[in-house]
Image (cartoon, rainbow, N blue to C red; front, side, top):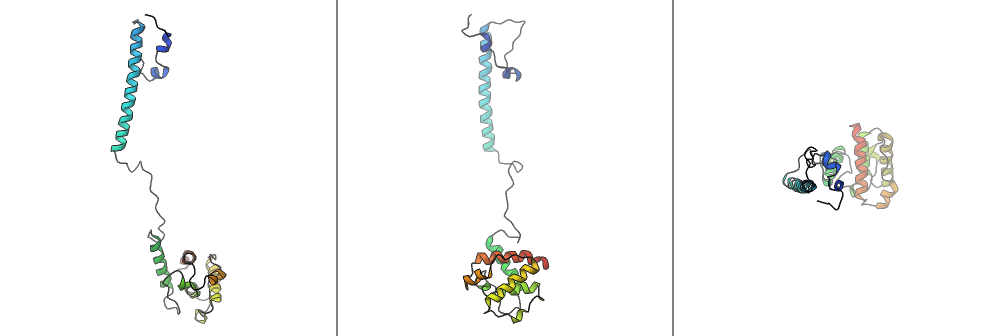
Amino acid sequence: VSFPQPAEKLLPSKSFIKAGLSPKLDKSNKSSGLDLKQDVVKSQTLLRSNGAQAKRALFERMNSEPLKAKDSKPKLKRSQSFGVSSASGIKQILLEWCRSKTIGYQNIDIQNFSSCWSDGMAFCALVHYFFPLEFDYNNLNPANRKKNLELAFTTAEEQADCLRLIEVDDMLEMGDKPDPMCVFTYVQSLYNHLKKFE
């Protein structure tokens, strides 16, 4: 029997031999080249079908098995500094905290993060609760917005190291209904700095 290709090309590659998948070559039993060719074809065919079966089994397993807890990535959770996750819940709890600190103060009715803070009295009451010796709250006038805002912001900055996230001029320019997000952000910062003094 003659082959158009040298016999070396018909032998399986070294990777088949290393994996133990080579045809049985027994030097003592000299088989014909045809037997060798059939063994090589048979071993390569088995490899392909085994590979296809392995892939199919893998896909079936992936589709049928539920994800295990150890395989899945941990889910990120929203910050829960107030014990709730929704923005409206956080705002309500912060409003309640502000109300609890300003009970008994005149000219204070904290219902929102906008108009209730426009005259500066709520800021002054909140800061005065923590630093009552810094100024006399009873001498403040709601009509003097600029003085009230300046007093509250300066006292919070000096006593509690709470940076001004709102400028007095910006609050005055916004009028009777300041931007609720600006006020909320500053009040949240006040909360984080003032709660250390509780």
